[in-house]
Image (cartoon, helix red, strand yellow):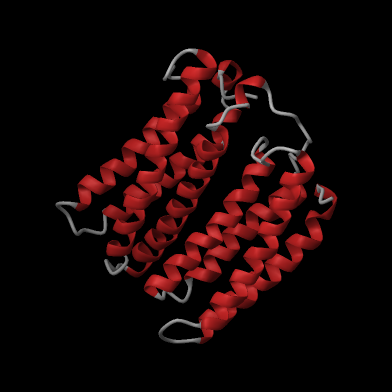
Length: 256
């Protein structure tokens, strides 16, 4: 049975494969490096094997604690980064995606919020898995858009904007589904679709910024569009875990 005691060897093997793939991508000046794709895919399979084994061991999806959601974010960050690399061949993106994913792995190692907690009644819902996983996937998509925005501003180039547009639309679609599924879940669990508790308020602000980016891009090719994605990503971090440090979090229905 796989437990958190085995996380370190899985994490090390995964990180080595991801970084090796990232180096391979950097060595190829143009086009797609197949070694990068295969090596990073192998690392992702190792990491996914740990998540699957942990799921079986816990008897529930590992989505309960911040540490467990970090597992999914690291996984989806690589999946999203690799997909963007395969489509647009930005050779630096596998490396930056791997660094972001490994940072979250290191946080889990250094500060493991990994208690084996059973799900409270409110979380025992059919909406639990799709709601959280869809959110984590949208976060990873926005993470890639954030990295591209930083690169675009740094180079003073609009070349990444079309890619950012695609990522913003995909990410916003998944984010919207996550919010709608959360509303349905909240109605079943607490009797209200929306209560404007701290997490819901920050989620609405995050969604509004990404919608704002999409509308802004319909009429403007300027580099200012990158700032929408940067602000949106910062709000997303606040929505994910930053809200837990606010005084208002004490009365939030999302404090489990």
